[in-house]
Length: 265
Image (cartoon, rainbow, N blue to C red; front, side, top):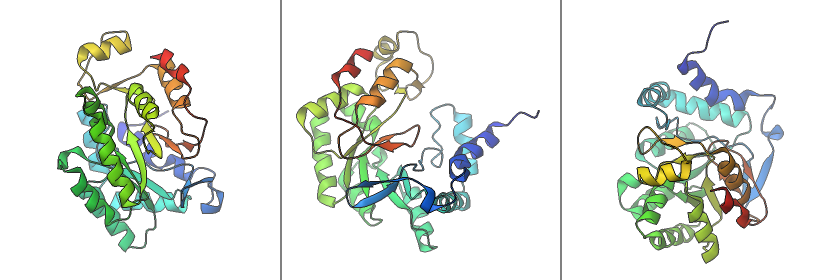
């Protein structure tokens, strides 16, 4: 049997969920979220942006595959399968692709992630607003960094600006302790963008202490803690809004967080 190349695996991963047994919009389960209706499966944006969190080689293969034509083709295939929402970065490249896709008849909803390289969060927010995102969430690694710097309350001010914009308000993070803090303070947040892995958003010493082993690679790489990840993803969900898992693309509701997840870390 012929082995799949990495490129073939990438292409398959991008489209396999959209071409399963579902026949179209009427077959895709949905959830109601504020004034919006969202498919239970959404399409993400890291591969489109060439961000594998794995290796520079895989980053390059993602960038090579996801040309403008292939991005729009992917979004169209998702819509045909009933996937009606795209979560991706609010950078100029993504926003231009989304605008082009909609000009050509696409109707996909957008969940926007803030981008740290623009520096001015509110200016970025104003640009996002032109494309009417249904939700905006604060970039996870930036949240982690501001937590480490003791500036987490500045994130709360940014989220207030998202609320004023009229979009659903989200917070991205790779650190369970951030969610614990936000919940304890009662922030006005509709959802969390979490994950089932650990980005090394710490010093090397901190990361190795959490992982319980020596870690190799770059600071932006991730590492896997099976027990902690399961406990975290199962217990950070808010009661009425939806929550997202960056790896699975699943959306669901569940009771308020149970403090038991802290014992997993």
